[in-house]
Length: 276
Image 1 (cartoon, rainbow, N blue to C red):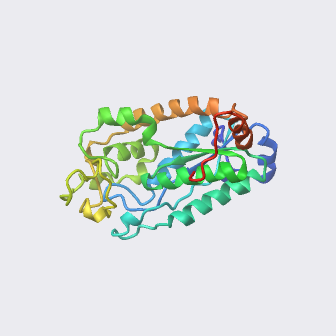
Image 2 (cartoon, rainbow, N blue to C red; image 1 turned 135 degrees about the horizontal axis):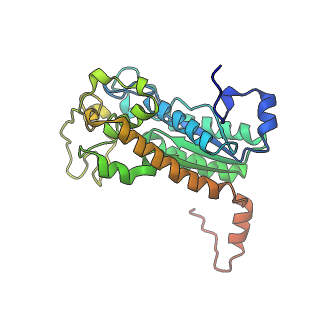
Image 3 (cartoon, one colour; image 1 turned 45 degrees about the vertical axis):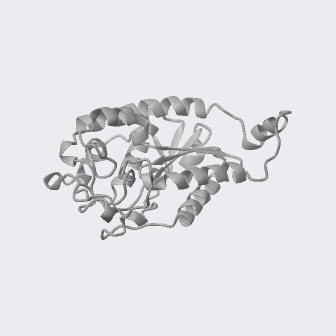
């Protein structure tokens, strides 16, 4: 029988096992992804798979301190709805589900959470729900996107000017984490479409809520043919190294939201702003 890896994963445990391990666990990691098209290059589960597989490796590195919660498989993807199969949640539903997941786990005694994000469209909502969790539940939930942890590596190694979806960066991560989700015989470059407004291209300084079918004909950006497991390894292992450094400091900080606010309010220069 194959030996199970040393990691705490909620789906792989019974409640007595979790109860016995709870004194060792200092952080709950909640992988967050999406179910959306990734061109011809990879499956609808791309973002969720990357987030979950990354979380498993993180739990192995930091065993026994990290518990991996089930992956959130649906994200905020209305801009991909022009491609068949995409499933999206409203921002309100997405945030409420994550809030209630954390709310449930706080009742079992957990106080530190990390949303591990694999989908760019989730970022604004993760910022908002993390702030709400701290205000209302008096626990701390941080969030991070996988690729941003190694953004310098991605910038240095990418070949196409435009990346960010079903590209060589994302596909390389999959080739390292879950190669079965890549369609090796169908890898294609993004078929980019001309954008209507100056300075508002995909990576431009002006942000326009384009639909994805207005940006790319085949649903992809960049050129996934340039992807490699070697690049994926560099991206993922660099990201893991950096996230471990953060977590080691994050779980040692016992300051609660109320305590921090009280300290801040005692500052003689502090005045309440009604517009905040």
